[in-house]
Length: 274
Image (tube, rainbow, N blue to C red; front, side, top):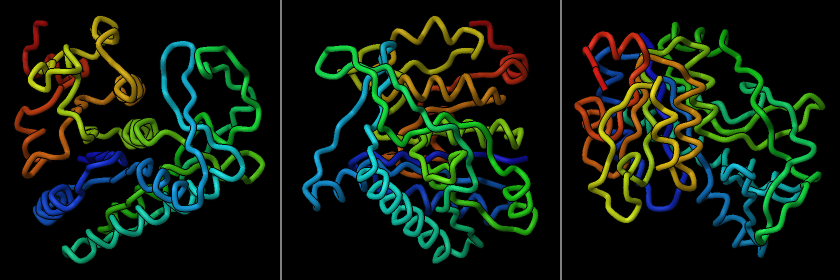
């Protein structure tokens, strides 16, 4: 049974409790693939060199990083640095780990004409190095897992022209989970789950069926929209949107914390009636 963990790359996330918890679960015999973000690291690198970070908002409200030729170089460096830290953190905790920061693990098609809103005005962006994910090297991941290694995957993809592309980490995790027929996808970030009121951390939506996702999409703000999209694309028995800031955040998520999105088989198993 394979599980996929996405560790958010936003500001304020301390990975140490996540890695401690993950290492204990791997030592107990569980198989995990780790995917991570790199947004805060990329922001800090950009600030260091004086590059302004810009975002794009799609017409349906999805937020993404504007990644021109200069930014993709910084983003690649940031993703590699985060990958090395997380892989190293697992290694010192006794985990056999394989850091996969190169773009060849994920393949994508470069988005050559992005419709977006900039300062409230519709524009078409043609110089962005972000990609729509097309596949994952499933064979490599399975070989590593079979050999006792925990893969740690960076949010970088290989484009059709051999270029490095920025891809969304949540959607990478969803692609990996679907390809490996994972049992669980856990997405940890700096929010406690899907909130009915973004200003009230206690207003977490505890559980709903994937089949009912359309009823909850209007609650999603900002990055949470991508997490719900990831849940839809993963189509695994259980997706959990959890809080990386909790003690033992994986144990907490699996024990019921956060928002649990139940696939058809899981909803039937627990007798979920909505």
